[in-house]
Image (cartoon, rainbow, N blue to C red):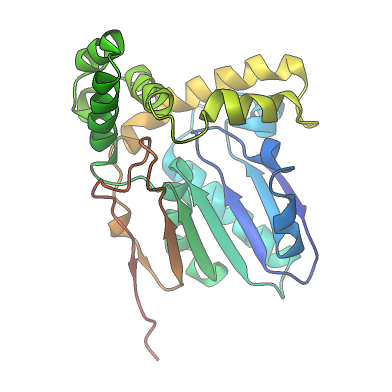
Length: 258
């Protein structure tokens, strides 16, 4: 398990739970530098991702529950190392599922939960519909035919087809930066934690994680979590990968009994 803590020791701890799956957030540290004035930022390369994959390779035990269990171990480590600091979890995209379950299973170790681009019931199907409408309006009939070949029901998609829909959702939306070419690739190319020879291995790790985890992440519902800490959900108004117009489930927040 790769981890890295940055920031001032007396600040709250922000544990970043990346998405992807297997898409490490460590390459974006330069863009997150301002956060370190307010938080101790803990980056975690999950099982099968980033530096953890480069050191230990693939893992046949890779499941969402295994990632959640690893995350609980990380929370215990964080509580031990920063015992006087409150802990906030930040889960993005696929990480929203892992982070929510971490908080649900270790409520005594989490003081707050932030979910960005959260997955939920109907999100993938709505993404397919919005992307198809946009491509049709722009006359990209070949891409429309590709989506029609995949079909509107995520339950019938293969992992590669789900990735195709996600890529087209990114390419079809001129209102947002291109996630791969504008954000991910530049960050990876200049990340001191990875060499150029590592990039191909990391691409393979993301494909492995995609194939193994997609059945569990096809249409996740976060409403099965009953949380006892503040929760903030941030959804972009114009993103089509995790559209806010879909019925995205939000976890229930319970008030602890006195």
